Amino acid sequence: MHNRLDTLLDRTVLLGYGKPGLLLRRTSWEPLAPDALRGRTALITGANSGIGKAMAAGMAELGAEVTLVVRDTERGAAAAADITADTPGATVRVARCDISDLTDVRRFAHELLDHTDRVDILVHNAGVLPRTRAESPQGHEICLATHVLGPLLATELLAPALERSGAGRVILVSSGGMYSQPLPVQDIEYRTGDYHGATAYARTKRIQVALTPKLAERYAAQHISVHSMHPGWVDTPGVATSLPRFRRLTGPLLRTPAEGADTALWLAATEVPPGHFWHDRRIRPEHYLPRTRTSETDREYVWQYCTNAAGFESS
Ligand SMILES: NC(=O)c1ccc[n+]([C@@H]2O[C@H](COP(=O)([O-])OP(=O)(O)OC[C@H]3O[C@@H](n4cnc5c(N)ncnc54)[C@H](OP(=O)(O)O)[C@@H]3O)[C@@H](O)[C@H]2O)c1
Image 1 (cartoon, rainbow, N blue to C red):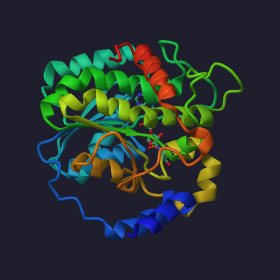
Image 2 (image 1 turned 120 degrees about the vertical axis):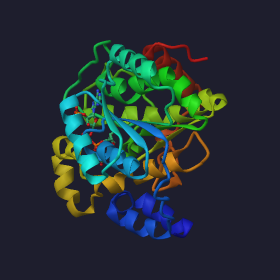
Image 3 (image 1 turned 90 degrees about the vertical axis):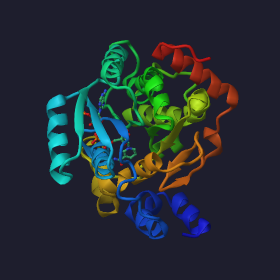
């Protein structure tokens, strides 16, 4: 698709993030090779439903061995059964981890490293949009803990296994909602002001994107590439529960979970420059609005805060 039409779709948001954007853009995409991920191992958090489950199914279909990293292993097992029913012979495992709980992330990573030598793909997909302010067991605001701190710690602890891949990939599933918020430098834990779940969600999705270049730089020497992406607007159980009105209004414009999973699958299977924010297989801007622009000092401050809170040294 022509660059200018693609950019125009992106800026209209409604068309670009919904199904029409995908349908128009994908006319110019190369299909992924059927065995694009053969021999690779992938971990996907929050993979018992929605986009995470679709990513797991897509990666299994492309030949990867997939582990669904979930907090409810019964639902994880049901998701794994669905995936193997669709792709007979696929290797799909289930591992328990509450990604918002740093103690549980440490336990999960250590147990995994005990029996797994190599990880090729790590997708941080788990997401929450809470109604009221809640905290993780370590006292961090729940969106920050789920979208940022847990993923940072998991990446750090699994880096040796990702390094053994020789071409490890880490993908942060952010959201176009992050465009509405600047980096919350003054109040990273959202302790002040009226709490709105959608704001907490967008702020922490903004942090994911702002820290992507930092993560890419940190792990470059280990040949681990880090990317963030957003799936567009996707009809998932999460949207049905957290945003019922949005779902009613946008109805037929929403993408299917498999369509929302496309860019993450493509990033897992394709060599692209690290440190960027992607949507529909293209690098997208970090900002639309001047008021959300990030100074390098702010980015560094948030990086220091988050690595510290996640429990490891940033340098
Ligand atoms: N749908 C969209 O339009 C859209 C748009 C932009 C970005 N996204 C992003 O896409 C990702 C997937 O969202 P979705 O729409 O597919 O929502 P979903 O159906 O609600 O899936 C979210 C998944 O995250 C899991 N999860 C939440 N907290 C967790 C934790 N602490 N530890 C482990 N797993 C946890 C949930 O597990 P439980 O089943 O145990 O709750 C669930 O499986 C999210 O990061 C979301 O922000 C979605």
